[in-house]
Length: 411
Image (cartoon, rainbow, N blue to C red):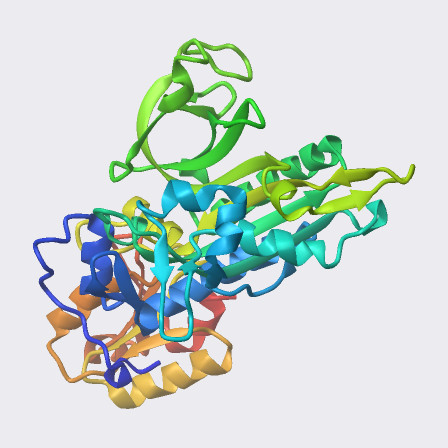
């Protein structure tokens, strides 16, 4: 992509309202635009990052049997009233949807009220179970005070996976598979070392639920880490757990701030009972389907990566989610830079090519802000040595690389 063709531009300043680091860098870098409180547009660079995060998640969930669908944002109030959540949430965070032709609907903040009646149409026998259904779709949450940039918004994209089982044992087995898949997702997204499986309140149906918490000073949660087991406990259950690790009993836990990037719950029959979602077992008995749910917020994950991976100049994207792998910078050497650009594209390497007629300093500042993993600089000085300057975003120093060896670096 030639940078001169991007309709977006970087900026040096951002509204004083944007106190979170992820919002500052993402807005300045031209990744997102704030429409209103908690509502952001994904701009071309940001959407490329988002799509890479989405694909990492999709591949992992597909690998554990997930079947992708796309469920509607609109849902009749009646479904939410059946589960009892309408009365609890309607006056707080649930968005109502009304028009001349549409009455008594809500904009979903999760999709249990949609997926349960959906599966009722297809599940009849124990032979129809288990099933694993997921989608990646926008959610709406009427946050009173959205904050922390894209970490907490009023409209956001979410991966919802719902599992349907005949037995608790089968749910438990799948739940463990999801734990592994989530660890893979966060590792591939570049934050695996900073992310901890965290024991949290389990509600009515199990002793614990689990969160995946990433260490960052921007986090809203406090977790207590057991370095022996590499798991953590959310502060909300620490006292109930008697300040001990639930896996090994270690009471020497260290406190850290963290942001939740994923969660998994055992739902039992909470959302199958209201919709009469049942199956007939081998003995011809009618039994309620047992459910689990598993969520990841995609913008929240994107914002968390920025909070974890940056320096004072800007973002340092992990290669797996970077908008482009290479930032090619021409310092008034466009003819030679064009050749390098086309060679990189022909080799299947994603390139952001700064061909703009602006100062050299502005180009370098934008490259630091945007944060692609690798940088190639073409200048009169380097071409005199039949070379280009090659630099990793994570390193301060650069090296000269012969033009003919550029592609070898990426192999």
